[in-house]
Image 1 (tube, each protein chain N blue to C red):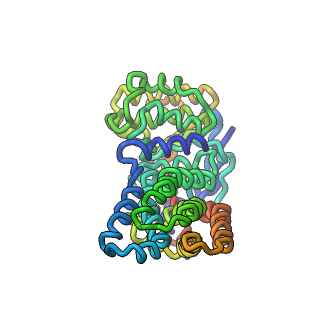
Image 2 (image 1 turned 135 degrees about the vertical axis):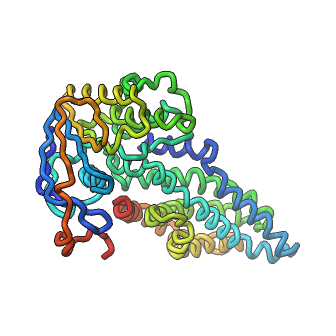
Image 3 (image 1 turned 60 degrees about the vertical axis):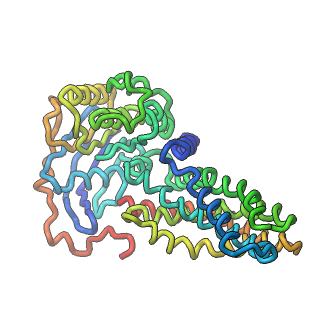
Amino acid sequence: MKALLARDLALALRAGGGFGLGLAFFLIVTVLVPLSVGPQSELLARIAPGLLWLGALLACLLSLDRLLALDWEDGTLDLLATSPLPLEAALSVKALAHWITTGLPLVLAAPVLGVLLNLPAPGFFWLVISLLLGTPALSVIGSFGAALTVGVKRGGLLMSLLVLPLYVPTLIFGAEVARRGAVGMETQTPLLMLAGITLGVIAIMPFASAAALRVNLR
Amino acid sequence: MSLAVTDLCVARGGVPVLTGISFDLAAGQVLILRGPNGSGKTTLLRTLAGLQPPLSGQIEGAEDQIAYAAHSDGLKSMLSVDENLTFWAQVFGRKDIDAAIEAFRLGELRRRLAGTLSAGQKRRLGLARLLVTGRPIWMLDEPTVSLDVDAVAMFARAVRAHLAQGGAALIATHIDLGLDDAQVLDVGPFRASPEDLAGASDEAFL
């Protein structure tokens, strides 16, 4: 499993690996929004938590296409399926590698980009916490979507349609934590819901992903 | 270590392609699968490797024993020859890749990225992967595609060495590998007939 994680990280960082794709998209969205909305700092401050969360979610979605498709094309998935590594573990590790290369950079970049959107000062802490808790769920749910559509040529659109509804709870509670934090309200309830969703998804999703992948490998 | 297949029926896309296949494969034996294109050799190998369920029949002794090599080699073009092999060795819980490098004469290419290799060199690297798995039963689907005469001989030597160590091999191929004691299974006579279609489906969602 360590070997798979190390390989996925090395591949992501080398040429054509797609590292930075999500980050660049996130950057573009958050830089362009103030330009399109106009210089109304109160309005920006109000929509900043939701916008940052939406940007992070779409950035994550953008990079899901590559999660399994590359391994499918060169036959690695077939060989992994016949290896001693259980598919559930392999998919969990791949989701973890995806989070490290996509989710984690988004979490780290979010406070910097929050400045551009005039995010109120108390919001920074809660934005980072909510993203840190929520983005692993995005990667794990994404690996399920990727496993479902892995054999489909140009399956990106289908995968987005399948995955987006599953992302909604994470988005609602994640953005709610950031919004409440920004205006100084109590954040405990949405924070617990967000953590619960993430933990539940990490526990259950790999089994669903592996089952879907086994069907697709036939 | 032995593989026993009894009255196996395999399907592709919900249509049975081969039926009534039975054979035994013991340590030190090699079985060559022959048959025209589309006769179901690949489907049979994928079923035996556990990638798809059989429609009926038993496969005994295949669990965690099989090193499968398909048309594509599962190589990452942005990793070097060494890194590719080391990765597969680690997945199979092993470390040593030198024997595999030696057997397929990849020594000079060790630091090259797999993406810069020629088709034949990639194939050699893909076959070297079999050696690092340490699995006793090799299942090879057209292993000699894009190999030159020397490399085919190299491959035949590797197969013989594997058999001498108590391994076994099941090879779908059209060329003569020069393996003297190879048994041949022609899949032609086992082609599934239309009446086998009744109730046969491997589709998960139907």
